[in-house]
Length: 167
Image (cartoon, rainbow, N blue to C red; front, side, top):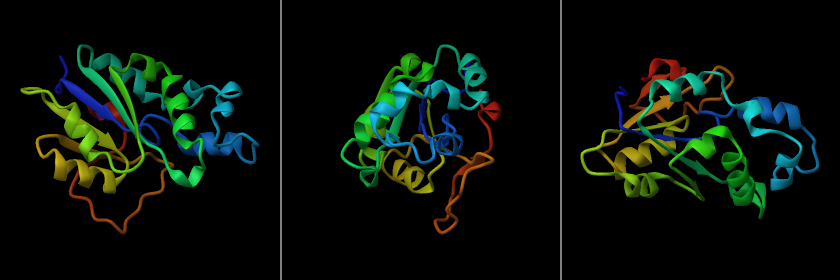
């Protein structure tokens, strides 16, 4: 039995090893276009602890809420959508939402009455927005070993370093 009934997960740097992907695709012509996924498999960059985490949380709902960044060009949303949906977790998820900015309103809209929900993200900015807009949601900041952490924004959230610490 899972501690939470609904897990809302960020994708990049939460379940997807973005730094390893950037290293593998450095200088590639299709770097931030959906066509990159014709040559690379999203699942090759999913962190190793994700499968065991999902198995331990059997029976819980999973939703992915991922941000797209305009700085990656006009195909940014399509790139992110294809990346997430082509992964085994994207096909397992109860929903996938690609948002162009802060995630708080989207997370708030995903809540069900009497359902314990946790939101897991690496971004303090996103966690703060979710806490503000959906105060009943537990928020966890995940800091992966290779991730760059923005220490200019203070975090009041519990920090985890792996999904192995959650059931």
